[in-house]
Image 1: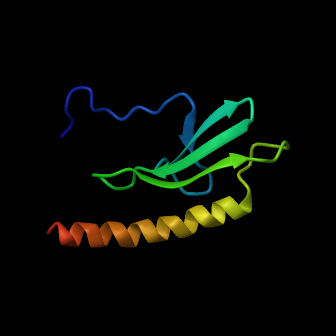
Image 2 (image 1 turned 90 degrees about the vertical axis):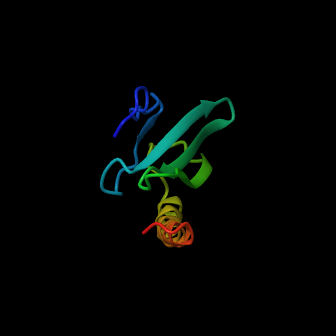
Length: 94
């Protein structure tokens, strides 16, 4: 059930992070005089938004997220899954 005004809308500077199979893992970016900054989060879980990684993009070539950052996001996503299940069990919801 959706409440008025609760429709999920993504900011203009957000997009699904490629390589993760859909729009459940999002990337926000912000250009600044000191460089481009990115935050990766997931909306996979109904009751929470999980921030998976925040970093400054250092490379001046291309827009691709570096492999090191992608690997870190994958590992944090696995950890988030475990932590979310534990949190739900403690709250008595499965």
